[in-house]
Image (cartoon, rainbow, N blue to C red; front, side, top):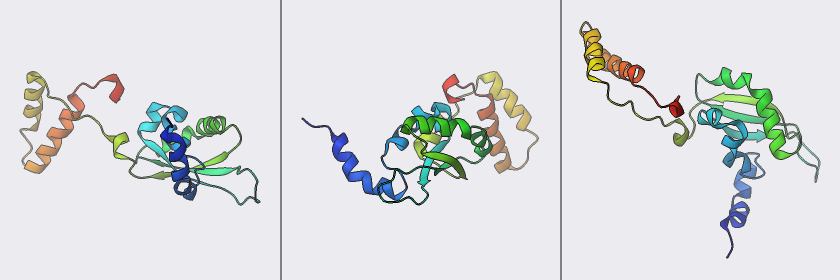
Length: 158
């Protein structure tokens, strides 16, 4: 019995090489490399390699990371650690710089649980605050915002 891993690497090598990934390992192991928290709002986009001679090991690449809007500065502060972790993962100085692109990432990483129901006291307090708002669209938006703020979240979703 053979595993699909061997065949999968052969089939996907050309597709991943197009974006600079020699193997899919960096993409599939992204949470293990950078940590679960960082992986929730970022993902590797591609690696830009400098020109190298035939048969030379690619070194000094620029990793392009896509990050959700508003988290670019957080990622920028962590780039030295990210470069160290990726180079440790590859076992040589593969990455020397990081370029940050803000944009949407895979749905599975940005999905957050919907806010739960508020307690009766909290719901009454929220509605009391919203009584003065005349515009129904604004009132609905503020209600959603209030629910999102007032709903307790589990430690994993923070």
